Length: 134
Image (cartoon, rainbow, N blue to C red; front, side, top):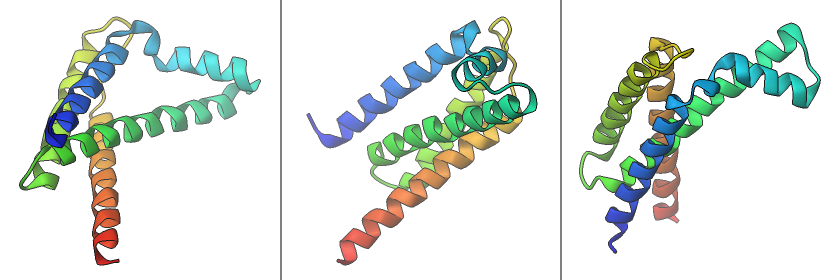
């Protein structure tokens, strides 16, 4: 199997994983807050801040990884197409989330997902350009 095909398969698998998390009504902020409180023993504002940080880092990481998979799947104009497709998927994911009971959609999350993807791709690109110079 060609490397490019493997990257496409990984991207599709990541989209399926994201879709399944979005479709789960238990993936709400209030549920993750309860888990954080139980695991850490934190309560109130401290638990809320940690919950916020963890959830936003999850957006950046997951969509960053999707962006990297798509970046490696494309042959030309990698950054633009990978970023655009990741952002489009992030927007469709937020819309899907709005249809799930107890879940809400957020334009800010789409921006965070989009920014996380772009940041991850730029980091990977910088790493590989640095290795090519060595």
